[in-house]
Image (cartoon, rainbow, N blue to C red):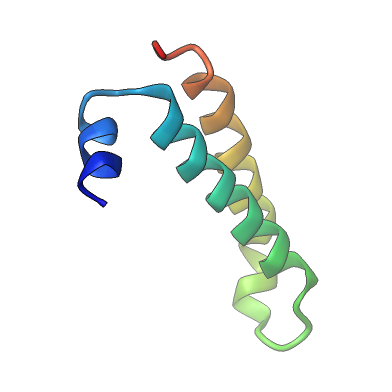
Length: 62
């Protein structure tokens, strides 16, 4: 856990890519669930934020 937080603070690619991937997965899960309307409403923007974040983070140093 401390390596993950240290990587985030030092702008390393690995931890940020994992965080962006988790956000994308969360958006997809929000899109596919049929129970909570607010989750469905914000699913597209969540997936979009994760995708843009992944594109930006892919330019960070290794």
